[in-house]
Length: 181
Image (cartoon, rainbow, N blue to C red):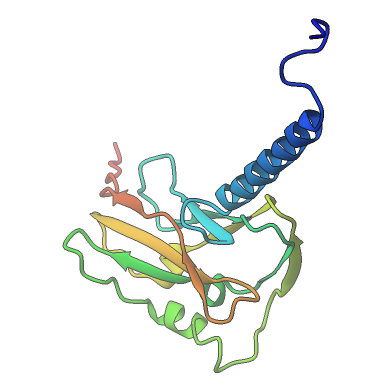
């Protein structure tokens, strides 16, 4: 017996060890790829960031981050936010909040020629882009009150498949009345 040869080596053992290592690495990469697609398995994730201050004013906007969670480049078009997203807005009692007259008009995307911006961009895997959703323009938020908001967007090149954002809670407080001395 040769004492200089480690126990795990011998005829055929280094190759077998190499194959097992490569198979393990391949399995790890596949698992990492699946995990990269996000907890929901959606190739496109939407994340809403609500305002960080008390909401008192009428120019209320939500910041939406869209991230490519797939392993392939993804082409997106940014146009009118009312056409790009479908919103679910509910009051404190869980009732749907109606669109404003302007919001209803802006959301008739299939009935009109798009006027305004039409930005085409490509997101590589892991890349993100941001969008502003002017919620007060689209929905009549009677003040004060508590509202929940979620957005949905069609996933490009996936037919009519839709992906949902996280849900955010908006607490609108009554505006303070100014007093003159």
